[in-house]
Amino acid sequence: GAGVSQSPRYKVAKRGQDVALRCDPISGHVSLFWYQQALGQGPEFLTYFQNEAQLDKSGLPSDRFFAERPEGSVSTLKIQRTQQEDSAVYLCASSPPGQVNQPQHFGDGTRLSIL
Amino acid sequence: GENVEQHPSTLSVQEGDSAVIKCTYSDSASNYFPWYKQELGKRPQLIIDIRSNVGEKKDQRIAVTLNKTAKHFSLHITETQPEDSAVYFCAASLMDSSYKLIFGSGTRLLVRP
Image (cartoon, rainbow over all chains, first blue to last red; front, side, top):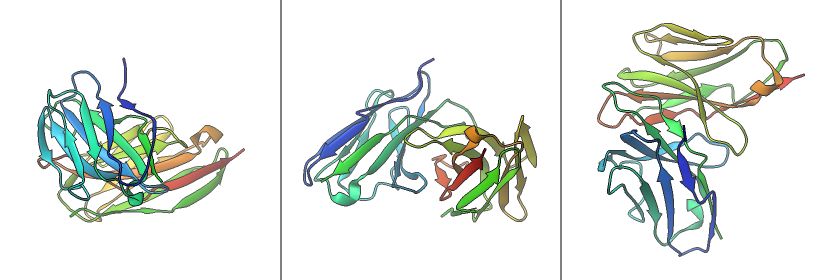
C-alpha cells in the first residue's frame, strides 16, 4: 500500500515569505507527527495529532509555526515570515491506532531552503 | 524532558564484521525504543523496535538489547554488508499523551567491502 506522502519534496523561499507543507498519512492511521531534521542531526519533534485534535504542539519553535489536520487525514504545516534558521527537512510520520506506542512510518520529507 | 545520547557518531567496519551502536536515555518512564535507518536523502526507515517489557529482540542479522536498570539500549548488526551503510538513529518514547519520539544524534555506519 501507499506510504506517507509529502509535498513538495523541495521548497525554496525567500526570507519573509510564508510556506505550506503537506502530509498525506497512511490510510487508517489516526496519529500524525511532524518533525524537523537539521543537516546531520536526528529528527526533532514539532507537533502531534490524534485524528483532527492537536494534542501536543510543544515542539513548535515559535508562533510562526502552525499545523492543522481539519478532517483527521491530510495535515499542513505552515511557517509564516520564514527565516534562514527554518531551513531544514520537515518530516511527517503516521502510526496506526493502538493502546500503546505504535511504529511511526515516515515520509520522504520536504527539504526547505530559505534564501 | 527525555534526552537520548547515541555513540559512536561514526563507525567503520569491514564487510562481514559486526557493528554495535549504543544509546542511553534519561527518563525511566520511557517504554518504547525504535531504531531507524536513513540513507542519504531518504526517509528514516524503521528496522527494529523493542518495548520495555522485553530485554532482547532479534530479526535476522539485526538485534536490539535493552537494559532498563542502566537505561541503555543497543543495536547489533551481524555479518555486515555494504548495503548496511547508512545513518542509524535510536529513539525513545514515553507512553504519555503524545507518543513523540526523542531521537539520538545518529551514527554514520560505513561497511567497507
